[in-house]
Length: 197
Image: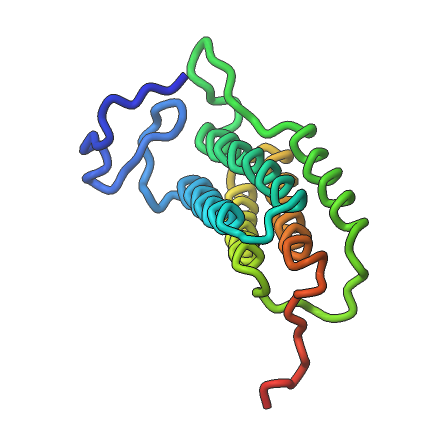
Protein backbone atom coordinates (compact mmCIF):
# COMPACT_ATOMS: atom_id res chain seq x y z
CA UNK A 1 0.00 0.00 0.00
CA UNK A 2 1.26 3.46 -0.88
CA UNK A 3 0.99 6.25 1.70
CA UNK A 4 1.60 9.81 0.55
CA UNK A 5 1.70 12.21 3.46
CA UNK A 6 3.62 14.93 1.58
CA UNK A 7 3.15 15.80 -2.06
CA UNK A 8 6.35 17.78 -2.55
CA UNK A 9 9.70 16.56 -1.26
CA UNK A 10 12.16 18.95 -2.96
CA UNK A 11 14.08 15.81 -3.99
CA UNK A 12 13.75 16.66 -7.68
CA UNK A 13 14.83 20.27 -7.48
CA UNK A 14 18.26 19.44 -8.92
CA UNK A 15 16.79 17.64 -11.95
CA UNK A 16 16.92 14.11 -10.61
CA UNK A 17 14.31 11.60 -9.49
CA UNK A 18 14.31 8.19 -7.80
CA UNK A 19 13.61 4.90 -9.51
CA UNK A 20 11.74 2.09 -7.78
CA UNK A 21 14.72 0.84 -5.80
CA UNK A 22 15.85 4.33 -4.82
CA UNK A 23 18.55 4.89 -7.45
CA UNK A 24 18.76 8.56 -8.48
CA UNK A 25 18.70 9.35 -12.20
CA UNK A 26 18.21 12.44 -14.34
CA UNK A 27 14.60 13.36 -15.02
CA UNK A 28 15.36 13.07 -18.73
CA UNK A 29 16.73 9.51 -18.33
CA UNK A 30 15.26 7.16 -20.99
CA UNK A 31 13.58 5.10 -18.27
CA UNK A 32 11.89 8.19 -16.82
CA UNK A 33 10.88 9.27 -20.34
CA UNK A 34 9.27 5.85 -20.86
CA UNK A 35 7.20 5.72 -17.69
CA UNK A 36 6.42 9.43 -17.91
CA UNK A 37 4.89 8.89 -21.34
CA UNK A 38 2.87 5.95 -19.97
CA UNK A 39 1.55 8.38 -17.34
CA UNK A 40 0.55 10.79 -20.12
CA UNK A 41 -1.37 8.02 -21.88
CA UNK A 42 -3.15 7.23 -18.61
CA UNK A 43 -4.21 10.87 -18.25
CA UNK A 44 -5.72 10.91 -21.73
CA UNK A 45 -7.56 7.65 -20.99
CA UNK A 46 -8.99 9.49 -17.97
CA UNK A 47 -10.27 12.24 -20.28
CA UNK A 48 -11.92 9.60 -22.48
CA UNK A 49 -13.63 8.13 -19.42
CA UNK A 50 -14.85 11.59 -18.45
CA UNK A 51 -16.32 12.07 -21.95
CA UNK A 52 -17.99 8.66 -21.70
CA UNK A 53 -19.58 9.60 -18.38
CA UNK A 54 -21.07 12.74 -19.97
CA UNK A 55 -22.51 11.05 -23.03
CA UNK A 56 -26.24 11.34 -23.52
CA UNK A 57 -26.37 8.08 -25.47
CA UNK A 58 -25.41 5.84 -22.57
CA UNK A 59 -26.16 2.17 -22.95
CA UNK A 60 -24.18 -1.02 -22.79
CA UNK A 61 -21.24 -0.11 -25.09
CA UNK A 62 -20.47 2.89 -22.89
CA UNK A 63 -20.67 0.95 -19.62
CA UNK A 64 -18.43 -1.76 -21.08
CA UNK A 65 -16.01 0.85 -22.41
CA UNK A 66 -15.75 2.55 -19.03
CA UNK A 67 -15.09 -0.77 -17.29
CA UNK A 68 -12.38 -1.67 -19.82
CA UNK A 69 -10.76 1.73 -19.49
CA UNK A 70 -10.84 1.52 -15.68
CA UNK A 71 -8.86 -1.74 -15.91
CA UNK A 72 -6.50 -0.17 -18.45
CA UNK A 73 -5.83 2.81 -16.18
CA UNK A 74 -4.89 0.43 -13.37
CA UNK A 75 -2.70 -1.56 -15.78
CA UNK A 76 -0.95 1.63 -16.85
CA UNK A 77 0.00 2.30 -13.24
CA UNK A 78 1.32 -1.27 -13.12
CA UNK A 79 3.25 -0.57 -16.32
CA UNK A 80 4.73 2.60 -14.83
CA UNK A 81 5.81 0.65 -11.74
CA UNK A 82 7.31 -2.04 -13.97
CA UNK A 83 9.33 0.50 -15.94
CA UNK A 84 10.32 2.41 -12.80
CA UNK A 85 12.08 -0.66 -11.38
CA UNK A 86 14.81 -1.98 -13.67
CA UNK A 87 14.79 -5.74 -14.28
CA UNK A 88 16.21 -7.68 -11.33
CA UNK A 89 16.44 -4.58 -9.14
CA UNK A 90 13.56 -4.66 -6.66
CA UNK A 91 14.28 -3.58 -3.10
CA UNK A 92 15.56 -6.37 -0.90
CA UNK A 93 12.70 -8.51 0.35
CA UNK A 94 10.28 -7.11 -2.24
CA UNK A 95 9.21 -8.38 -5.63
CA UNK A 96 8.92 -5.84 -8.41
CA UNK A 97 5.47 -5.36 -9.93
CA UNK A 98 5.60 -6.55 -13.54
CA UNK A 99 3.13 -6.63 -16.42
CA UNK A 100 2.19 -10.28 -16.99
CA UNK A 101 0.96 -12.23 -20.01
CA UNK A 102 -2.63 -12.38 -18.71
CA UNK A 103 -2.89 -8.59 -18.95
CA UNK A 104 -1.82 -8.71 -22.60
CA UNK A 105 -4.20 -11.61 -23.27
CA UNK A 106 -7.12 -9.70 -21.72
CA UNK A 107 -6.53 -6.83 -24.14
CA UNK A 108 -6.41 -9.29 -27.05
CA UNK A 109 -9.70 -10.91 -26.03
CA UNK A 110 -11.37 -7.52 -25.67
CA UNK A 111 -10.03 -6.38 -29.06
CA UNK A 112 -11.35 -9.54 -30.72
CA UNK A 113 -14.78 -9.21 -29.08
CA UNK A 114 -15.16 -5.54 -30.05
CA UNK A 115 -13.81 -6.04 -33.56
CA UNK A 116 -16.36 -8.78 -34.21
CA UNK A 117 -19.08 -6.08 -33.98
CA UNK A 118 -17.42 -3.78 -36.51
CA UNK A 119 -17.54 -3.69 -40.30
CA UNK A 120 -14.12 -4.21 -41.91
CA UNK A 121 -12.22 -1.03 -42.64
CA UNK A 122 -12.14 0.18 -46.25
CA UNK A 123 -10.21 3.39 -45.51
CA UNK A 124 -7.93 4.83 -42.88
CA UNK A 125 -9.74 6.68 -40.10
CA UNK A 126 -9.13 10.26 -39.08
CA UNK A 127 -9.20 10.89 -35.33
CA UNK A 128 -12.64 12.17 -34.42
CA UNK A 129 -16.29 11.27 -34.33
CA UNK A 130 -17.66 11.32 -30.80
CA UNK A 131 -15.80 13.21 -28.07
CA UNK A 132 -14.91 9.94 -26.33
CA UNK A 133 -13.59 8.45 -29.58
CA UNK A 134 -11.48 11.53 -30.25
CA UNK A 135 -9.88 11.25 -26.78
CA UNK A 136 -9.26 7.55 -27.37
CA UNK A 137 -7.48 8.36 -30.63
CA UNK A 138 -5.27 10.81 -28.72
CA UNK A 139 -4.62 8.19 -26.03
CA UNK A 140 -3.68 5.75 -28.82
CA UNK A 141 -1.08 8.12 -30.22
CA UNK A 142 0.40 8.75 -26.76
CA UNK A 143 0.52 4.97 -26.20
CA UNK A 144 2.43 4.64 -29.48
CA UNK A 145 4.89 7.29 -28.27
CA UNK A 146 5.26 5.38 -25.00
CA UNK A 147 6.01 2.26 -27.04
CA UNK A 148 8.72 4.12 -28.95
CA UNK A 149 10.24 5.32 -25.67
CA UNK A 150 10.08 1.79 -24.25
CA UNK A 151 11.69 0.14 -27.26
CA UNK A 152 14.43 2.77 -27.23
CA UNK A 153 15.02 1.97 -23.56
CA UNK A 154 15.00 -1.77 -24.34
CA UNK A 155 17.78 -1.22 -26.88
CA UNK A 156 19.98 0.00 -24.00
CA UNK A 157 18.70 -1.81 -20.90
CA UNK A 158 16.59 -4.88 -20.11
CA UNK A 159 12.83 -4.22 -20.25
CA UNK A 160 10.10 -6.72 -19.42
CA UNK A 161 8.98 -8.15 -22.83
CA UNK A 162 5.38 -8.40 -21.59
CA UNK A 163 5.43 -4.65 -20.91
CA UNK A 164 6.31 -3.94 -24.54
CA UNK A 165 3.64 -6.37 -25.75
CA UNK A 166 1.09 -4.70 -23.47
CA UNK A 167 1.67 -1.18 -24.77
CA UNK A 168 1.62 -2.46 -28.36
CA UNK A 169 -1.78 -4.13 -27.84
CA UNK A 170 -3.05 -1.11 -25.94
CA UNK A 171 -2.85 1.20 -28.93
CA UNK A 172 -4.76 -1.37 -31.01
CA UNK A 173 -7.35 -1.69 -28.23
CA UNK A 174 -7.88 2.06 -28.02
CA UNK A 175 -8.28 2.27 -31.81
CA UNK A 176 -10.93 -0.46 -31.88
CA UNK A 177 -12.70 0.98 -28.85
CA UNK A 178 -12.82 4.40 -30.52
CA UNK A 179 -14.58 2.78 -33.49
CA UNK A 180 -16.98 0.99 -31.13
CA UNK A 181 -17.88 4.33 -29.52
CA UNK A 182 -18.39 5.86 -32.96
CA UNK A 183 -21.59 3.83 -33.28
CA UNK A 184 -19.68 0.68 -34.24
CA UNK A 185 -17.80 2.57 -36.92
CA UNK A 186 -20.83 4.24 -38.51
CA UNK A 187 -19.63 7.65 -37.31
CA UNK A 188 -15.94 7.13 -38.06
CA UNK A 189 -14.34 9.99 -39.97
CA UNK A 190 -12.77 8.45 -43.06
CA UNK A 191 -9.60 9.66 -44.75
CA UNK A 192 -10.15 10.86 -48.32
CA UNK A 193 -6.73 10.75 -50.01
CA UNK A 194 -6.02 14.15 -51.52
CA UNK A 195 -9.39 15.38 -50.25
CA UNK A 196 -7.93 18.63 -48.95
CA UNK A 197 -6.50 19.75 -52.30
